[in-house]
Length: 294
Image (tube, rainbow, N blue to C red; front, top):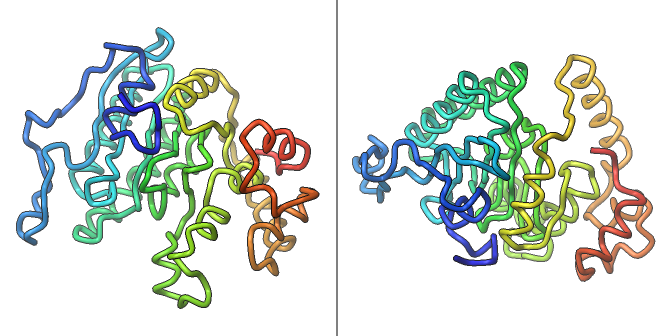
């Protein structure tokens, strides 16, 4: 099994995060449930439609878990992919596990199934919030090669807690989407350093959007997920209104910044140009004194 979370497949990550030998898959590849649309468009299909879902234990406690496979069509959400995730959430509302773990690795909606994918994302957001209202915890892990963009990024930000590595990427619009819509002068998606500066784990941690930043190791993601099983998270109208106010204030404070280091300097980082090169422990020592509250 790969030690690197970034390089591992979805199933390798899943098996490394949960307790050894505890995973039991729902709708496995042997059931041969694949997208009804892709074959008609001469696109490849997968018998798990790019996502593994099932039941396991984490530190001996029952959890439901989903892992997206970024290697299949970018981990994108189509009709079957979305239905498997939605079914997992509905099961969580009846089984009341300690948490639902989402191992995100997706560019968002599958364009080949655009309407079905968009509907699935809206249903998933509604289901996550309804389950959280029922007391179900959601912990998201982000560190795969495909990142966490589009509708998947929205779902991730609906979770109670997020774990991310520096190699992970989280945003609403992906770099290629921004470049296509606004031009390369606005955002050059081939500039990998730029992509990681503005969507990577260090930037999201400094903005207070993730709860744990870990090294790119499956074992560190597992330890962080265990640590967050009982962390408090508020889902009330007052909490939502506070977040809206925080986002409005963030816009006022950073709207004129052209790049992430300008934001880091305003947050109080003395040497923002050094941030991308800092090892995790040194970065956390710098960041924890000035990051926005999560």
